[in-house]
Length: 294
Image (cartoon, rainbow, N blue to C red; front, side, top):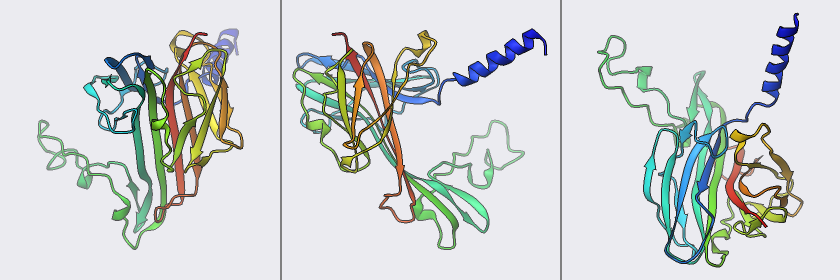
């Protein structure tokens, strides 16, 4: 092998070693700390490779919820979805801490009937596998048949075999505060993976330690793996991710190296689903926090 091919091969291996992770879903607020009761926060929602740089697909607005400081439902306004991102506003007309985000609960998996595998929780091709009404030979301008609705657990027949089901529970949420921080929106539901912060997420400062408690079904999530990534990867060589672990008390300690927006993600699996025929549960929690200069 000549010198040039060796260099190219080495470069290829280096690229694989430093390749960006899978697409990440995120919410990015225009700010997290406001004053008065006539402020607005604008939120971007997207899925992308480089954090906070919309380059893959937009987030879905229909699942976004708002919790006002007293815990009652709020609303998004001026929602719009473009090619790579969605954007919406929330009017912060009450003092305290607001929660904005989405909660997802679903069952995914598969089963077989007479040796044929079928999927749960995913849209499939139109009945019969035909792309257009009439199948092959239909006019090119014929309207496409919509995808078949996803199968659910209720669709599994009694004679099904190889049933493999996973309950998926995920949260993606952010917190913004106008005036003095409050705690009502952090009240745990007792289901899935949740954040119960010790340090308020809108009071983070570079160089200072933050303590976040994570809960699974209302109990401390011990030894939970948490990934913390600063935004702006597009403008630096290294991702700068921190791979951290909670203690036995479910508490994560983070010291922020610099000011800016950070993405936090925690995932875990267990066998504690209460749903029939489900053998595994996959839990995830995602948030974006803003770290200020001292």
